[in-house]
Image (cartoon, rainbow, N blue to C red; front, side, top):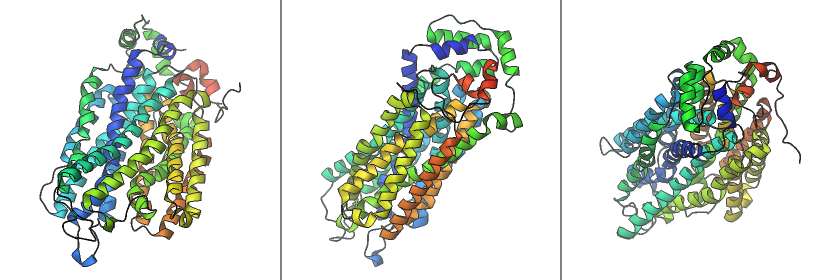
Length: 521
């Protein structure tokens, strides 16, 4: 019993509105990634500026608890925002709350560069306060963007479209390094040249550096601001209007206008459709139909983000440890930002970025299951090699960088993309945004393990501690490999077939195998 409006969306050819939706939702993810990861380029600078202790004979460094809070507070906000906006997306509508997330992101990105006072406590306190609320806005973008894109897309290209939205995260990570690199170079060119810390402890931290980190953080507001108008112009998704609001006529009119076709309303048929699928999240019926999939999406995202965020957030500590950039005493403050940002940019450009677009290209050919399974396996293998052979690789920086880049490649041509795609497809319309939010929040809980736990092993550049961290991450990725067997393949099927909402397919969907191998030629 498939509704005409849903059939029209599933069978629609790729049109300009699909591309527009990808760009609008994708720019949100560009902003999300830039805001979350640019802090890694300037966190060492904050230590030099506000925590210098002459008695140590070393550059200023953020205390462990302060460093973890500065880096991790946005992740706490993101987790909270995912749960709140994911629930609101199902209760109030995807579009209605979509613009609110952008407004929060713009305001808090700008305020992150401000300080209520000049001392270390006031600067860091202000930064952490606004980065929490910045994360709160970012969190809302995860379930809303994924749900909107999945409900707009046709069934043949749905995975590629959702993955393309998420791929803008890779662009944001690149720009986090690129913007910091360009700005620090500009500051170096126009400021008086000073020597490294070992030559002059005080003058090596240029006063103008206090402006650099603020500008880097505040620029995160710009891309979000650009897309606000277009987000507000998007119509509510046809699936939400029809299935949740129960307004078949409005859904047919909205989607007919978007697709440029005439769609029959079928109000009576919609009533029967909704009656067969009216069960809440906390019910036996939900767990009978979707319990294993929810366990699979939450566990795999949790395990993936332990490794993914640990890698991204600890680059600043690992790069000097393996000789990819100079030691802090051999650099002045601005030069350290430049070299750290340059190394992050190169790894992101050649390791992180290509993986996202490999997923976009191959996801409808190989399927989500195979890509996620292989990605976890390869990440585990490369991290295990780096952990076991770290002492050797420490003196072979190029080889280490290649292995490090490959783990990023297979994270993104793997579980970092598919864990975002699958929760947007596996669950029923009434609970889709909420279930995606639960899965994403589990991921951010994993990211917090990386920020508050794994990062402690890399801050001092200790060889044995970094080895332990790498081996631990290899283990978590292997767990992700096995938990992937809990999720179903979704390739080539409509959302209603996958979730069992279509009554004609309910019996079949209750017995779906956990994965489907790709068709052989």
